[in-house]
Image (cartoon, rainbow, N blue to C red):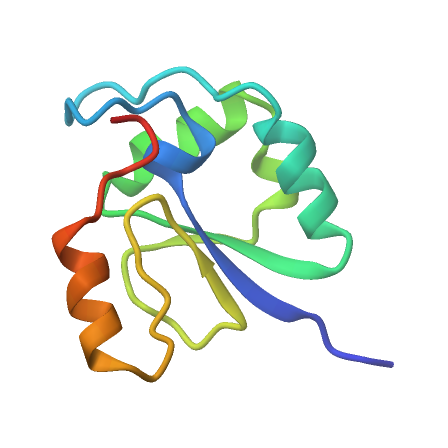
Length: 111
């Protein structure tokens, strides 16, 4: 039996309709297609939410949006994982010059 690999999925900007305005008391509505995306991932991977948000608030959001059954944990620690899915990241390609240029030109998808 093959052990499932872990994928860390960011909450804000990936699973919800985050627009860059952080409100620590309220998590934006679920993004269209997010439930199906997480359900699909969970068939082959251990899915954990990677967020700096309050864990209780994030848990309530997952339950409200019927995602809790697909999520193994919520963490703010960069745990060993197969992949990270995030709206604010750059994939290092081994070339520091390319990475600097990507940093200079970076814009999240919602801008």
